Image 1 (cartoon, protein in one colour):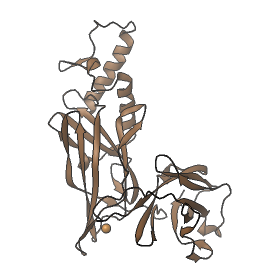
Image 2 (cartoon, protein in one colour):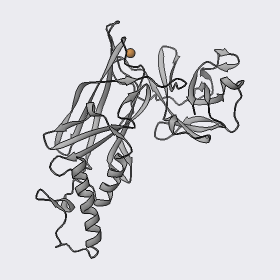
Image 3 (spheres, protein in one colour):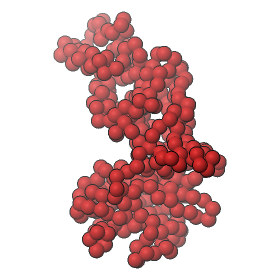
Image 4 (cartoon, protein in one colour):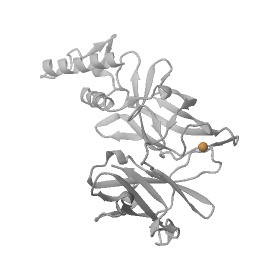
Length: 315
Ligand SMILES: [Cu+2]
């Protein structure tokens, strides 16, 4: 694919240099007899270039890439090309097999991760984003979603993932593809759960590896365990507030100023501000409150004065 994209990339540059006066009769970029500039399914030259640049920043997940109707190639990406415990961004890009040109109109649906707990002879799913959306308005041909894995692949069990895809009038997807979920490095713990009555909720911290020393936006999702547990866990409909108390356990549990709670946003995510004044291990103690302000998790189980519900992030 890279070669074809490069051809397109070079052709875009050439066109840019030679076609200052636009003219409808002018011959466009033709590859394999298809005039790419007249391919309405695909991106404009500028959009294609943006997508091409974006995919240099992520890595292909070979297990989740596939072909649809022998016409389209579906490419799955994550930051590292692998998965780890907790929150993972997942991106999809579709190209026309014949031209390598990006396709703008496709839908990723029914993303279903499943873990088989071999010793317990039981299956369960995990928190997922509610839908795959356009990643960014400048990148209309990149769709982004997420999966937050509860457990790592181990002797206890293994993961598989299924999804459906519609590309223009074609349908395809993958069923039960085996995937590997790695552990996070020591000092990183980005996924926690709490219970309210019989319901189980999961707190997925989003990409703390993007944080810098000082002020950061802290983002998370609250998901609710489904019945049956093999149905992917969607976002909790409740409106919580997540108060944060970041401490450095290796440095006398000192804290930092100017932290604000995570509150629910229009897109269903939770967002607040965190100020990490130095590098090292930060234990972010959490107190979850319901819409009436009652503490529902992390409040009544205090150890050394701090909530025992926490994320660990090492800067
Ligand atoms: Cu499991």
